[in-house]
Length: 572
Image (cartoon, rainbow, N blue to C red; front, top):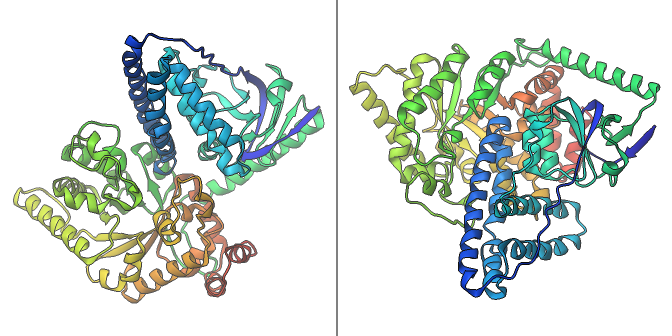
């Protein structure tokens, strides 16, 4: 029995025969080309660039469908790499100046950057080079006209062993027969690891030489919890891990028993526990979880990877499908929170290269500038109210002027439908996302116009802390338990309570088991959770005492350090 220790990347246990993936080596030779052919070579490179962009669009659609919007943002990192001057300018310049083939010019540029990455000591930053390699391999494959391997072609259930897996490989694991994977390279912060966690596939990375020590067909145990790969395990080790798998199955069975039970604390404080909906594929899962409704229907997917904006009819069908499935339970539909960069794809004039898109023309700002898009979406949402209970949510609100402008368009859409004799609900609540600090600071005024609020923790936290979550240099500073975040959340909830308005919290924080006591103790009305974490969060909520959680919140508010707050929450 051989035990190799690595880095735990995604929890879970997998046992089975190993499938060793041969390392894909792309050999690039320097080819001198005539001066009369260099412009044609640059054109060939640019065509490969365009093909790679199409690959990224397809990958984004796949991740969006499989894992939702948050994971799809990882593809934005690859788009940023692809648009970097290193690729868009340096490679064509090298082709023109040195009269060499595009493949060689690209590989030289990538090697130069890799040398810089090798000198970085911080693991988080060093891991970003794999994203660079992924983009580089895509480009080279198009230049060399090579077919990219697909892990879905593996026909038998197995544990995948590889030198390295790139994010583009990992995206396909959900549709494959791979039970888990182990790689020689990689760290816990790599995008490959993050995708594995999202797909709930056991994974161990950073094993150094596992791909050389394991042979095809070897029986192996993959322990994603402790970061271990066991080759040819002893009967005792197999029995131990079988027992651990059985325990996990029993825990999952206990979670299953919570379906349909009221989400209330031990001392009887009732909460609505809803689910986030990123794509229609999740509707069946949400219905099966027996949630209290859909707390956040993200509609962005309707606007992605297409050449024109979705029609009212297309949107109406999508919203109606979800509303009908909820069978009378509320569905909160948020108008699309897309950025101005998407307008060009839809054939609409808009900014092409915003320096900071997170703070640019996005959300309600974009839709107020293109009010026809907003009215079309609101008409489709309002029409879906004939099938059940619907609330409308506006993203990125930061001022009364924005809210009032949106309300006018909302009212105009209602009046148009009424004049056309279209059946809609008489009263439809219009709420706002509180995700910009300005909205939190002037919430008492906004609540005179808004019917309810939903706290979008993802953006709120990054704006409070001035941290771009997809910027590898500062992403580690993104901290839901930062004292400033805790105090801001508490202030928002208290303001809404005083105004008698309903408070939902959505975003990644609601799906973090450590954060549940904090949010429960603040007394929010609704938690909207990812379907994957729904039952786990429900179990935690039902194990708490509201009175005790409220006291914990008061103690947390007096603390000045994130680690101190997290220790407090862990000790509950």
